Length: 172
Image 1 (cartoon, helix red, strand yellow):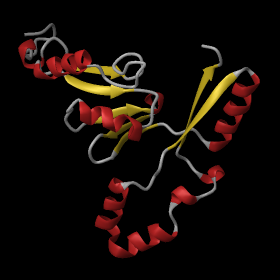
Image 2: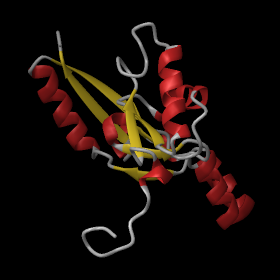
Image 3: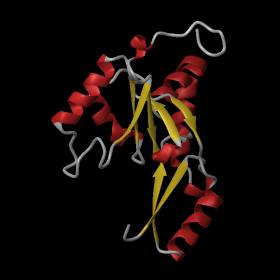
């Protein structure tokens, strides 16, 4: 029993940790851009103990997928764009996202550049395989035709809602 009088889940089911969120750059991935054999083995030990391993990075979802596959991780969320997006590794379904309105992106960019920051944008496509599947299921072929003609990813940047910004101080 735990402190609240509930039946406790045995720790052995989950190993020491239930979840391990692991950063990529300079943590899991070395300066050579690869995951070392030692890190692959460490992740394999965690998963063998029942720990759910999630990759988390400032990188884009698409850029993180090869590492997810290399580690043989099961389907689940990949945390990308500095935590702004949680997206399923296999289906592409967006589980969570916080988009910045375009006017705020412009303001952050101006302020960041004025204060010596390097500014990086993430323009995350709305129309992915998961989205097309939903349109096909709910609207059929007319929905796919409409999506082809009026793809929101082709709108001018000022009308989009799927932009993310990262600002890094130059020289750090």
